[in-house]
Image (cartoon, rainbow, N blue to C red; front, side):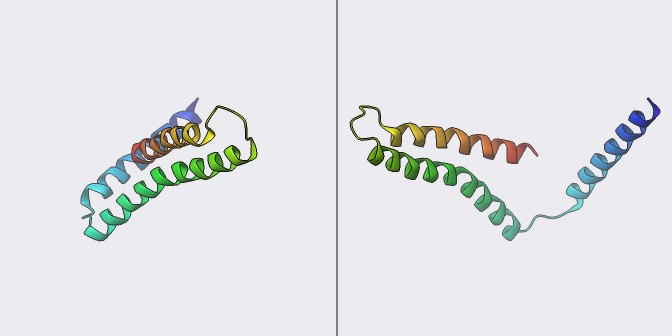
Length: 90
């Protein structure tokens, strides 16, 4: 039990030091631009992959009335939004 308490105490102290360091650090325009660019790539990349895989499946599986491209684009939008949310959460 004591080990878990020490581990929790160390984790809390580590988080407090990270928060204090983040408050003291001045964000530059370059760092903010890189951050936004990373978010954009994290959102767009699953959509593009879904579109390419969907077109490939539509060409391979002719005769189906189901459009793989549209479905996988929507899945890509969901996955991209989830990526951005989880990235911002941390």
